[in-house]
Amino acid sequence: MRLQGVAMSEVSGLMANQGLRRVQMRIFTAVIVVFTLCCSGSFGMEDVVSSSGPGATILMILVLPLIWSLPLALVSSELTGMVPEAGGLYRWIRRALGEYWSFQGGWWWTLSLYVDSAVYVALALDYLQNKYGFDKPERMLIGACIVALFTFINIRGIDLTGWALTIIEVITMVPFVIFTYLGIKNGTGSAIHPFVPQGESFGSAMQLGLAIMLWMYSGWESIGTLSGEIENPQRVIPRALFIGLPLVIGTYLLTVIAAIMGAGAGQWSNMWTGGGGLDFVEIGKILGGNTLAYLMLISAVFSNIGLYAGYLATGARPSFQMSRDRLLPKFFGATHKSWGTPWVAILIMGVVDGVLIQFNFSTLITIDVFLLMFAYVLIYIACIVLRYKDPHAARPFRVPLPNWALIAFVAFPPVAIAVISLFINGNDWLIGGLFGIMTGPIAYLIFKAFYKGTKDEALEGAAITPEGEHTELFVQMEA
Amino acid sequence: MSPRSWRIAGFVLGLLAGISAVGMGSWVQGVAGYRLGRTWVVVGFTISSPRLLVAMGVLMIIGAIILIWSDVAGGIIVGGAVCVGLVWCFYHVDHRVANLKMWAIATVLGFLAAMCAGISLGGRTEAVGLPAVPAPEPSPEPEPETVQV
Image 1 (cartoon, each protein chain N blue to C red):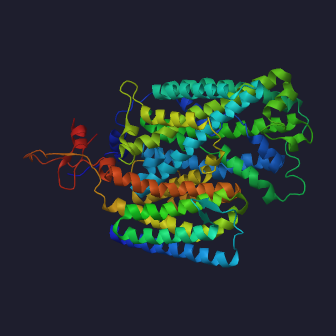
Image 2: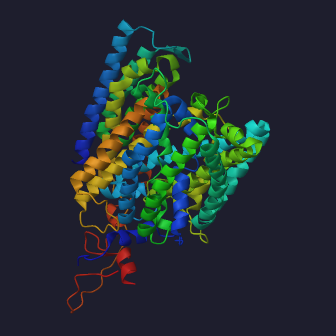
């Protein structure tokens, strides 16, 4: 018996998403999730302006998404439609490149997010501590409360997470709207002049700015990890990505223009974060007095909390799926009986974050760039390989390009940028990143030896074993 | 490629990684001396950058040989030696790049050796599949070729 006319993505989804509760996520909520993961305000852009110059910053805001974000958003949309399974990129890579590379991709991406998500809580605490000057025990307590609250919300389900993110983004963006209005209306600075800082070449001016901008424009693959818990992800996720992309570009563009203008003529070179410089809060003070400064501070805190909540949601899913595929300890793969969420994977991530924020983990952050960029490169390769390996598979969304053009469009520019980014963040990031990468092959050897992994047939939704016997999936399908 | 071929590839790459580390260590000892940052003192032993390179190189060679029989143990030893080297490079803040240049070849080859070990392990391990249920008796009616879900 042969399986014809069956959307294999749907069939395999039966297995991959077992135990997870699917929720009806509106496009609006999905856009909020995408916006949170990829933007959540423009905090951090101040450093780009002072290091690259106003003109170059605006140019990067407009051009970088076309060669960096758009390819990732398109590829994520195609792969989400084709493989709408919990774990997202981990399962995409598995379908294309097999177990070994999918483990590497999932491991690198998850490790990166474990560290990354803790950074956002630490940043939110820094803002609060600078304002209110509380001591370490209070900082620990507030940090633990934030982590505990959003861990619970995430365990409760992505519908509640969606609501929480919506409220957070409203609190984050309302001050930005006032800020942008006042900055453009009353600002005296030039938004595009000078193009680069005086005495610097275009290349040298771009270095630090590009490194930051790549982070600001990353995260388009993240929502794909939630595919197993969203009704009709093939429709919802690509739409959310396509609405989210111009929204993110517009947000960056308008808020940065307002900030440069609002800082005052020639003051762009004093824009930086971390104290002493003109950041969004300080510029808010210039534009709208203490009230706007206070609102911008609240916005900064909630922006980071939103990023934490979003990455806690997406970061836990690949480890859940890897456990389901017998590549991580079994408890990672447990789902909550009532709420249908991968609660153990989320809880573990929350606990790790709760511990990390109590310490200075700046050394750990250096592993981030390599881990994420290598995972991105694997996603691009997976998309191209699947075009050749599985050309007739159902793709509800297909990047409207022939294979050769897809390679040219989604492979060369993003991969080149990813490779460049590995070397422009400094030697600590280079070496820390290499260490992070090396943990992947070692972890695979350990976990594969322990847990054995799962046959590809079990993932692909095969109905018949090579010996001609019907699998449980066949029985499920027949029922 | 069969798992055995991957293991052999891992052995060759691990061996080359070890040889390059030993070679670099010996070369650095003669040329650069101790200008690669402070030494570590571990239970009475003074570990300098060249000495660590040689020591980890020897460990990689041992790991590569073990890899022929056990991809898990061999791969972990070779990969672990690379990790120790990277921690060393990171730790020596003022000489990071100089140290990394010494470790570069061993790092790349060690990564590839560990990768080959992993792929070999993946190929030879009997993965867990879906439990099969007995096939039903064949019906006299011709079975449809298409299953609608």
